[in-house]
Length: 389
Image (cartoon, rainbow, N blue to C red; front, side, top):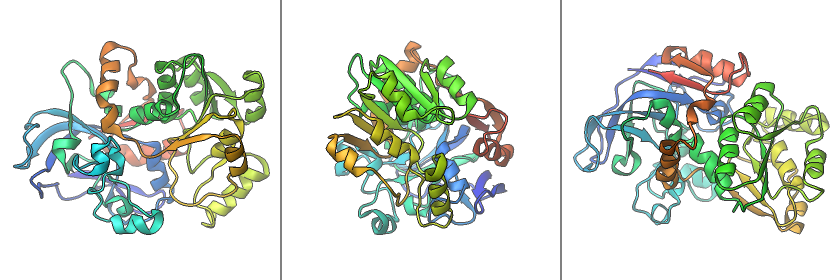
């Protein structure tokens, strides 16, 4: 089969690789009909995620048709149309039983690696380094899905791939980011980053009852989408001081919730931006937490700071004094996708949201390297790339 393979920083190639097979009774094989490039994939593309190996198949946003199942899978049948949550979960451990699906104890065969970096391991993740399991990803023609009786979600008739494929990751990610902020009627929410996750965070904040959402970015087309499609107020941080603007827009109090939907490749300005760029380039710092710093300082006292943006190691100059003395509540983590699937599918079916609004580019799988290039470098007004095997 054809698959998108990582061969080093900024070197994605479409290669011929062996077809996946059933190796465990709880496995299934899915013929992929739609997959996508995630903003998190750019961290792989730019070489910031450790434990990648040449030839690794990438991708964790995918869906398709079941073409083979293991003998222990009883709730799925060949021919079912399914989406595949990006965290791999066993369904039986303490964390799965408590709805913390992305923290599954049993799905990362390389947990010992993650424990050296993090103390404990999160779940395995499709196509996202050997640190998180070394699983082949879904930017391919076929994929093996472990724990398929837990990890496959059947899609009802009448919905297109593009309406549901983002249930695999970015829609639940944006929703969880907002949901964890305990949004109350009348709340003001600030979102750093207007990429796909940021767009879904904005829409989710409104679904959860926010009165106002203020979106911060520097890319004109992303800000335009946030304003026109997601109905946010917008700030271009290259034109205004975002912190001062937020204070003014909230009557001096600050937003009730501040959400960092950017993560480890945030773009800063001035000396702070240069500091982060240099330290990350020489690996003295593994993330550029400009957005996180701003979110902490901008939040109102006793506010929420939510972090759906991916971080993979160490970051510097975090204003913990502000966080502690303002009594901020922090929530963060990889998304517990399984927890939100039924709720978000219901929103799609009722017409509350059509998740396909974020798609700007549709490409055949063979053009994935081009898709990565334009997504990474913000060319051709690219915000979200969908690939068709």
